Image 1 (tube, rainbow, N blue to C red):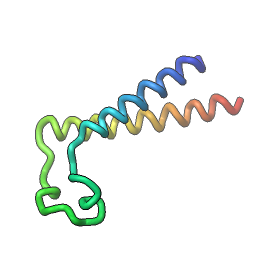
Image 2 (cartoon, rainbow, N blue to C red; image 1 turned 60 degrees about the vertical axis):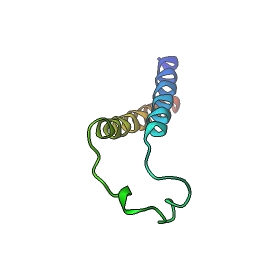
Image 3 (tube, rainbow, N blue to C red; image 1 turned 60 degrees about the horizontal axis):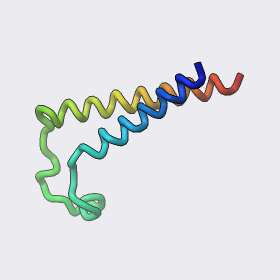
Image 4 (spheres, rainbow, N blue to C red; image 1 turned 180 degrees about the vertical axis):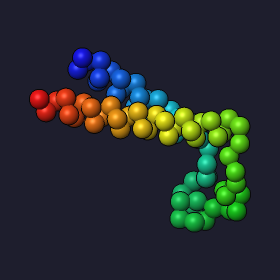
Amino acid sequence: MEAFLFFALLVSAIGLIAAVLMQSRGSGLGATFGGGDASSFRTRRGVEQRLYQFTIILAVIFVSIAMIVFVASGE
């Protein structure tokens, strides 16, 4: 059971990293400090919207599995 949880945690972590890297928002360090242009405040549509939702779902799955592993390892 514990090996399955660690494998699921690894798979969800890799998926989450890939989903975040596939999102193309902002351009460099300038956008981090407010130097981005007004086009960064636009509505997500189509594939970009699905990728955003998929990233949120993967984050929830990752955190849930991490908490389960933490609770299970305390026994």
